[in-house]
Length: 545
Image 1 (cartoon, rainbow, N blue to C red):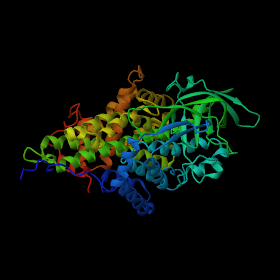
Image 2 (image 1 turned 90 degrees about the horizontal axis):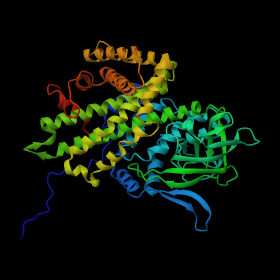
Image 3 (image 1 turned 90 degrees about the vertical axis):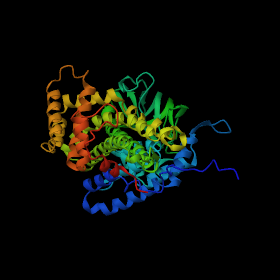
Image 4 (image 1 turned 60 degrees about the vertical axis):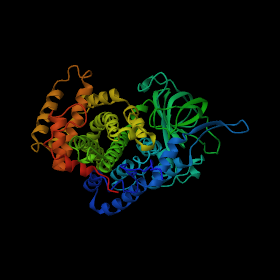
């Protein structure tokens, strides 16, 4: 008999059949830390249920299917009528239904809602990130809608609903809705004040018709969209429903879908308004940016959480692979250099999770001090965490060697997704300049930040030195625009270090402060000082199957 040449050995089993929530100590501890004790038992149960689903083979398969069969645009029906619809793989609807039913659009309507929702968003995004876009937009639209109480009374209960219904119908006939956003235009990009879409008022108060285009429309099969347009008094926010109260379709022409690097399961579209597109004003005329900024801030925090999710999943996959794969006489995870790489990745991932969850808790607190902290910490976190995502995922992919470069590993999908959150909702320069704007115009924001990092002073000499260095940077605002990225990076690192010193295990905080604040590390991952307790750091990052 010929010898077998197809015996499979020394291959890691798939990382499935585990609880994404309970297997992540940094996340589970953050929920326990930030939630009222009376809510903990219920929150743990719902998040563990969501975690087991997100770690299941079935939901992982849905993610592969939704990305492998991207959405398709249907501009007309078989009879030639304009319908402007997007068709998705059934797996997309299953993913969305699961996330909506888990309350991931319902943060504003229940106690501890933001912490619970942030943890859930971080969990489900590890199974499939693309469907997080409509979930995020719907959640974030609520504060903007509240600028117009009459509209909020109709749309907010449907947005907070735990029911997902895909059919387009008037809001009064739907148990739940999804909301999207369309701000950027061809000529403007992040400079939304350059928008040229025109809003002409109708006779009825608050009603307008729009003429113009939007270069990026997020989640174009949503039930309504918040858009910016030039009204007589200036740039104004509007709500544009897909279906009008009488059941007719609003004029909302989907010109094409974007062919994106990643985020393949999710549709992004170019949209035209033809002069008959009906819209209702949200907030005052001429104050559109101020009105919509509440939505933008909430989606920016979701960019932080989404990147933290990608980082956590990449680290979990890398540690899992190294735990099962043997090379050079033993398990990869026990090799000193591989352990150094994995520990470095794990520290970066935990710092992102701890920061994102702290900001979610600030939303729940809702005090003037906490809201002031959000004003400066959200753009700083959005800038830094999303920028760290791509190099981390690329390094984690390399931990799998050639297997990581193959689509079946799932790592290429994570890598393609990884730059997204740095670009959406304002790219790096926009975030850094927003931090500068907060420093110049909102003294309470800087005070709140200094109180937050000050709570950890005296616990680590490297953190103390970094805080002093940050204060020196803040004392000199000369040429600050050119230094905005440098300042924002330092601010985010000091904030992460302060949070880890207070709440993370000593080995994690020690490694972070030594390398990110103390200069005892290199530019690449895997350059931690060898004297640190790296084994404990890696074990903490292991997903238990």
